[in-house]
Image 1 (cartoon, helix red, strand yellow):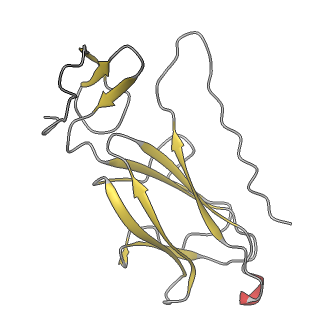
Image 2 (image 1 turned 180 degrees about the horizontal axis):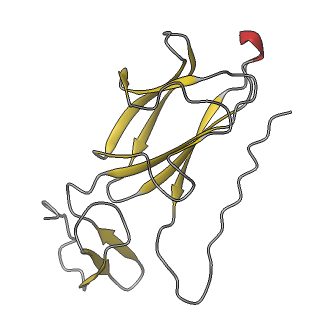
Image 3 (image 1 turned 90 degrees about the vertical axis):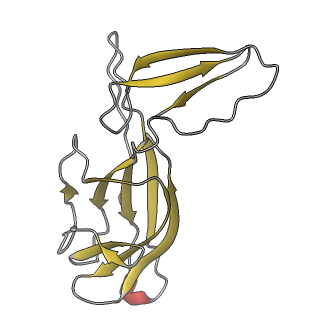
Length: 165
């Protein structure tokens, strides 16, 4: 169920069903193609998948909050990837979220930012930078959209240099 979809009046469109390469449990997604572009339409309840990486070397264990609610990612240490490099932590409804990364068990936020997660998409979110005792903090959140479509004739690799000097 894609929900209501706005299509341009008078446009010459081709709509096809393809194997779902996004999130959610639907076996298919719709692809809408016109003379100049193509776009995907996912099940309205597909949500967004998140993978979380702690890459800040001078910050101890942290808790991750979305809209001021704990996510289940608590006491998360430097160098950890929740759950693994190939699995996603959680699926959540698509939309805008306030993301906080707090020192475990406190309300001290090293990162407090707003991020939007698109429906049917997957993201790797990486906490990078240094807290530097709060002076000259360079902490930030990288939210990278992942490409999950399998390509039979090639491997896909993403390299992210998240080291902090």
